[in-house]
Figure 1: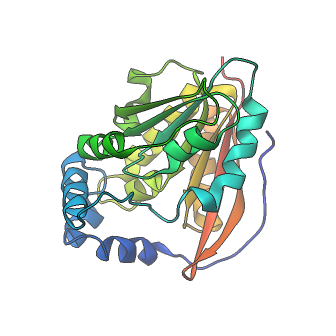
Figure 2: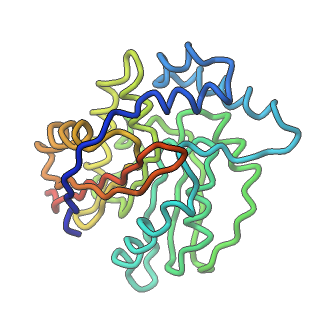
Length: 247
C-alpha cells in the first residue's frame, strides 16, 4: 500500500500523555521516566485494576471505534481465501483494540495481543468476551518484549502490526529511546512484503516523520501519515510504515 503524506505544522502535545497517566495512577513521576520497564507496568495495571470493582479496559489515547476506519480496510487488502491475516497488537496493555479487531473482522484473522506486562496480559485474557465475526478467526494473548519480536516470530510472518502508544511510551522514557528504534526495526523485519505497521500517536508529524524516516530508512520501508483528528483538545495521527519485500 502506498504511504500517505500530508504537510502540517502543529505544536508538540507530549504533556497530554502525562496528564492521562496522572488521572489513573499514583505512580506518575516514576512511570513517566520508566515506561520501558516491565515492573512499573505490572504495578500500574495492578493499581488500576484495584481502583474499580469490575474490570474495565484501559485505553491509551482512544478506543477501537476511533480508528476502525484505518484498520479494517487494511485487513481487506491483506485478505487471502481461507488464510488468516496475521495481526499483532504490540504493547496491548488491557486495551480492547485487539479483541475488537478479532470480533469485527469479516475476514479470518489471527490476532495476537502482546505486552511485556504479564499482569496486563492476564487481565485481558481473563476478561475478554468477544466472539468472532468470522468463525475461522483466532485470538491469542502473549507476554512479549516488543524489542525482541524476532525471538518469537519469523521474518516476514506478520501482515499487520498495530502500535497504539507503545513507541510513544518508549520515546518518552529516560532510557527508552534506543529501545524504540529497536522495536521499530524488529517490527519491520517480521512484516511480510505486503504488510504494514500502524502507529497511533499524539506526536506531531514534524517530529515523528523525521524519526521514522531516520530509523526505518535503512530497513527498506516507506513511511507516511494521516491525521486521525482531535480528541479532548489533542491532535492524533496514524503513522504507516510499509515494508518493501525484504529478502
